[in-house]
Image (tube, rainbow, N blue to C red):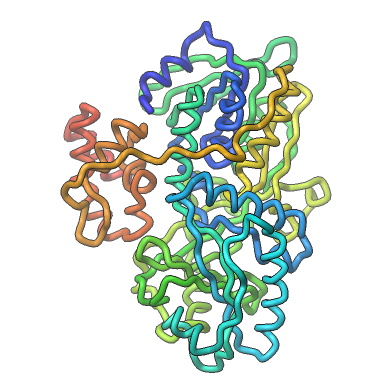
Length: 487
């Protein structure tokens, strides 16, 4: 992906696009990929980096949503399981199967959870991964050596998918470009273009040099997650809220806090939340929380009480309990929960839709809210179906259900970032030359996942990585110092 070439296409005043997508997270990238695969002339603009917001800060699961079974949301679970199967097939190497254990500490729990998870298997049909099992206490302890043994009566074993969310975002961007789309990160939409009362394009500004240009098109799709209402108010100043953000955080711990390759899911903690402990990239992710309110931000900060909550609950289920000093990294994200009309006046985030919501304004702006990584392909299909109707485009069938996503080219074997991190300097070269990385954060948080794995090690290697980027981008030592400080 050559950013200069992509920007030149986007800034060409003679170009009239069929579909303009605002937002380069899971929803926007899925929409752009679907539109381009149908042969529509497609443009995508992202204000920061691809997946810099919520979409790189997920629980790293491609899942059917076991907890939604408890709420009777069978349709959502069936859709999620179908899409999980497609992603395992279309993004092999980025999305992989992962075994989970639901431990049983009461006599009835193996039967109770086993019954629900057997239904989970049936709903997956031919796209299932593996069969649910009912291991005894010894077998559960063998899979998860650090799981609390006192009172353990066995458990229920089931399968879901795991992935690198930032890597999947880049694969979708890369594939969209090969399908003919023009995509660019670090380009902010600052206004909408209207002609005769209809949205007919966007006003854009590049992040670092302030270059401004207009991108014209037949339909604009607002896929900006928690920022969706900000874009909607460019269209309708009095637009009511359509998103209710809910913050979730994850702690990153050393591998020994599970001790195996099987994840643990606690379906109901003392206050009714779901707790995950998941092996990921030779670390353990512990999450997640569900905190309402707070400022809408690209980089939300974890709250002390959220961290305390996870540490306290981990101690209930792990023999060697982590302390605050064992935390290698913390990350927080905002779920862009769809706010349906019945929830406009209040209610908790538990009552707000975990599914996606798609609608258009009187002037033709198409907006998508809600949803999750697992169902992003279906969300893109739905968005493009509506966008084609709004924009008067020729109707064409969706082609993404069986579309293989393109992974990155191999990076050269070279010096490690740091002894505590699995990344090499050749990956910096690839990130800058082929993957539109412009900032130190682009490389350390998303082209690699260094900042998500070990914050201390990432701080140590940041100056070295920044200097390599400066060589590739033609920047000076002042740029290096500023990037390191910002990071």
